[in-house]
Image (cartoon, rainbow, N blue to C red; front, side, top):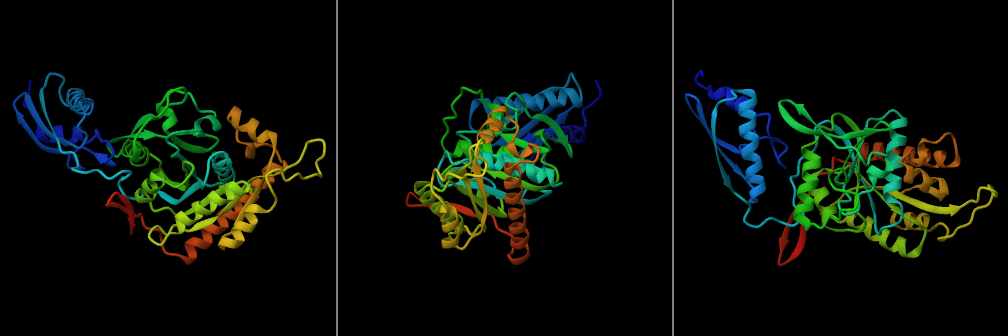
Length: 379
């Protein structure tokens, strides 16, 4: 066989993604040296994952790529060195924007069960109906529900080559691009991960994905105020946050904490407003009646108290639940009270995004350090 060319090897290796780095193994600097001797090639590479599986995977990927793209009979030796961080910070992930994405909106809730993912799904499809390019990142690592709500539970992201690098192609339905940890786990499989593992998975869905050009990327956060929230805000310059609550006193108390998290001086993510879900119940047979099962005007009063906008009041309607269960968000229905409510909510959110972008400087991704066992957040 002809003598191997080093440049051909380097170009071939550029097609291998550097996991969690947002680039390929050449441009990221993971490959330290490539040496060729006639029909033999030696590749020295450094990775940060110390697991045997990771080392074996990168070795196999390099050998297969050289055999497929350079020469099938090349003798390949891969020397894998592990250079793991001395003290990885819980929840720390890389803080870079995603090229091509104009606005990143975090959808949060102080507590679970208030319909945060339902609001995210219906915001997304309504934005798409309005002509925007939309994506949803399901960051609820421990309870992903976006695949079910978009009827893509059985779907799996495909690999696509972007500028010579292999990327995940988001699953798409109803004009919305979607990535979720739910695509990579079985329906009955519990995700039992510590913060760094969850952050690693998020990092890959953010930076190793071919999102393309988006007007809005909605990030469906887990309930509460914790590690994943800090990881996302460290990873991405979030344009603004939408906080979802019900009118119930307990939910409002937690929603107040959610708003306070985004408004902390060292986080400083603009809160676009509050959404009151399950605002009232109107029976089908009594369309003019409203029953305030969880309380009345709770989110409105909270919004006034915190000086943020009440973006919308979504009624408690059986068809919302049914739509989510069958994987077709309620906002896709023909003209109904629900559709109008979601359209008003979406228009109000877009207005707040426009106002925020006109009046305020771009949000910066935050940096997180740990001091004496406590989390400290810095710009």
